[in-house]
Length: 165
Image 1 (tube, rainbow, N blue to C red):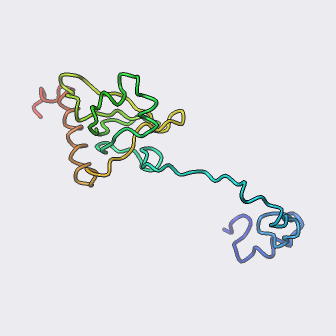
Image 2: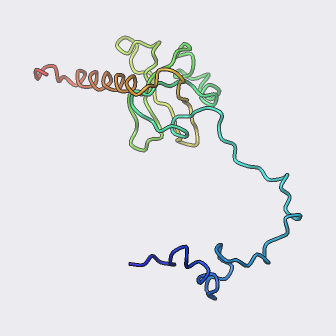
């Protein structure tokens, strides 16, 4: 069936139709202001972050190696799950919440069996991006290996070993 509004080759016909006057595909540029009247030097463009933020630049993935972003360091510096918990070492994502705006991270400096889980970090919730992707240790096979380890640890903690697996 034909698409509503026609195809691109029909744009000239649509532009001449009275109902579409002033639409973006109209060829009548007389209504646009002269370029000399546009203060281009005052235009502020959105700045892309300099860091590869998890949830912004890179989709979250179990096993992804991460570290604190500059925003995460400044916002969490006084909290118990802040940069002092990681002791300067990276961590990896162990769980992702259903909305994909927060992740559970296990820091390599924290022993999960003696000190417990590390903590949940925002990757888009409330506009906060606490984590960035590490430059090293994120090859596909390394991510897969860490994800498999997380999966295995989860099965063992559920008591699957008692079933003989």
